[in-house]
Image 1: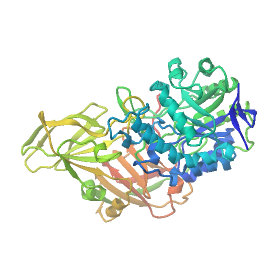
Image 2: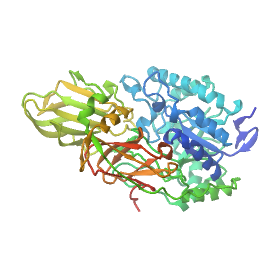
Image 3: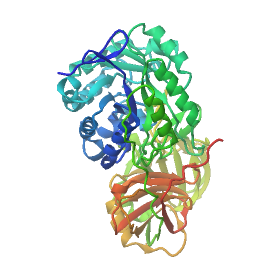
Image 4: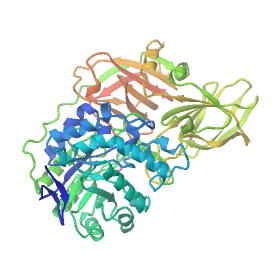
Length: 588
């Protein structure tokens, strides 16, 4: 039986000193047919361990459900890690941050406003217990003492930046052990005295998260943990982007020098990220430190492997650094193939959103203004219809928009209310019989800080010229399965000129080599969501910085590839797929 323990100064693998050289790779951000490629490239860079969060929210879209199909097959992912001769470091949260929608916490947790997250609170801990019980059959038999790759499990995530409930941390520890986890348990916090103090327990091995000044940060960690191996469990080698900002990059030479200094100190490391991947679908999170900032679809992170899994200059620099401290496989990754040739197509059919509403969800009427969460709509779009007095002239206002609302009168656009710009009122003129509608988009739930878990949709009170609107008809727009809409659009109207939204449009294209990735060019479109062959690539927005959406090669076939787009504003009818990404301008 192989053992993995924490010694006086080192991690111990079968009793011998072992340095963890890990890279973060989130299985839920990578197409499952590409998992092996990314894992192998981590080993070829000199890493010996793969780290991943587990995203509770993705596995459990509804309480009582725990999905492990397709891209959520964590067991298969860990088996591939083992097959590549690597170890695994798993961080199941329950809160993960990760720039992921709601920090990985399921939105249904918050339907009961009395549920207290990330603390000793019975309703929350009951749900966490269910989560751990569902996770145990995946993790327990894959621990190292059972012949599997799993050597470390993290309890909570940067808890010292959130709270100081030691009883809560102790309960999570007990739940983890009760589930059958026997490998060493860790915590991670930024190397700040208060965070390291509040975020850990004596029985949990403390690690740190930082991206610079490694010797100083490790010294702070050592002051809080006099014995045991030093580890930076998140060595930040890049950063994420938000809509309306710039594309973040970090200096390759400086990042490599910091990694070298960290390893020269004898510490273990987890590179965050080794490969970032993509926030497919509606999975991106948001930050709100006074201003709401939703994260873009790409999670490239300026990592050693780019969004499409191609080694970058940072990959080779890190490989050279690691070779000074450990054995590196002699065979590096093969040189990347030439980019796929561009593909040109054109939207041929379209249908207005209004024509397919009944395919997306059924409306219900309420004697109050419900949030999207109140009606069980936890992501995407919700259509609100206020019941106005016969003369609906005046200023329509809501207390808060979460996060963006297009306002229509008789389905003609009258403007936009947006959270990030603080817009929450608009003048309208609606005569008797006119239909007023607000198409509200959830742009991503806050993943860090006190606004995690807040409901989406329109937040009341709402009124017209100060008079409360008491009755609302609300329709959830379910976009998890786009096939019914795609079939309807194929029989829709011919596209002859530019498209005016909100509209679904479709095109068909062929590729000469379906084994190569493509990038959907969105630079001539406004704002919306795109699908290829039924798979949701994610959101696009002319606000930038991102100008392409990643199309993994496994989604493509030689002929009859179908793209469906929901365009909210206006778009040129041309469709272009490129061989290279365009992630936007940098601050340099």
